[in-house]
Length: 448
Image 1 (tube, rainbow, N blue to C red):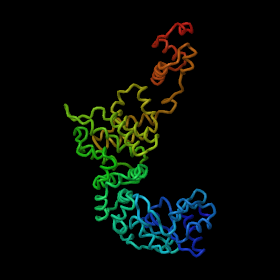
Image 2 (tube, one colour):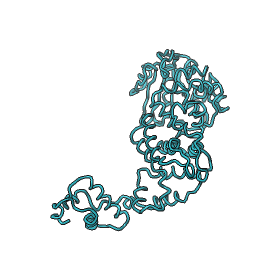
Image 3 (cartoon, rainbow, N blue to C red):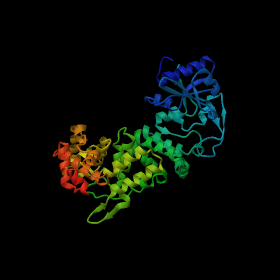
Image 4 (spheres, helix red, strand yellow):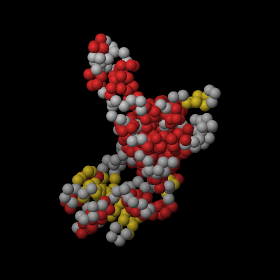
């Protein structure tokens, strides 16, 4: 297989299957994307060949769903999923059919799929499109329409409700009225879907484009209140107009989502959750206030992301984004050491972008952003995180007994180093002697 791209591999798979008398087509999302003039993220092949026959034609191919007729074929770094035409029996768990029948008619395979725009087959040799469900017309009209009865489709796999919203958001399509009405009727069923599958769809809605529209559709469908009630609670929570002339917490957050352009997962989640602590901390005093909402929001973000089974690294970064998003207001007043510690945070560019969006979608004052961005870009790593002048071993050698005070001592030395007032180990030890009384006579005998 000379062409090592996924497209080339898919075409070679189809050609080889046809040389052996089998029917085979490009199927699903890749056909949709090609017809829309987009680069497909992956390529799938549908065929009348049974899984064992596919494996026999492609040494090294791997069965990943023999029961469902799915085989993975690889060549170098390219990977293509090859699935046997099938029809599905009843679904009892809201996710998978209890059994399938392998078919020879591609129409039967299409009729069990989710949406008309995903039900197209393409012959790559002739560019002929097989359309049994009106998918081409719906692509032209910009519609996400369930194949057949939408309640049946969503009853089979409840996650399809989220997928409908994801496709509408990503492509800027409308959801066909009967399809959307079915989502609204069936939305409570989304609660039975595993946290991992839900998580993955929500991340795609946030990062594939059209995040604001996606979350507005989640809200209108009722899905948001089931999956993320903490976000739904932002609606109607007023903000001080002198800082937020755009409106309530929900509107502000939606505007920030609209400003995202292919963001990282953690930045998108940080934007979504940065003000999640405002609804529970809302109070009116001299003006509307949200006391300690970054701290409250950070704890809530951890709870939400843990509930959705995000990995620990993602949770920690989003927690940091939420907890620190108001610190930019103090950057001009920070000590040099405090500022350097702030801008050396892991993936600080995400903190910067979150702050930029926060300002741009509210009061539009970007002075603090520009100042911090300049300092971040100008400071080399060795200035932000210099090699320690004094270590724990140095303190032990000087006679200090290891304990909690070591951290305080070492931080004091690093503060002075970051401030530019300390450049040598001897100076650091002198600072320790001056600020921290030795705990017993042993240290005095060691020369402190």
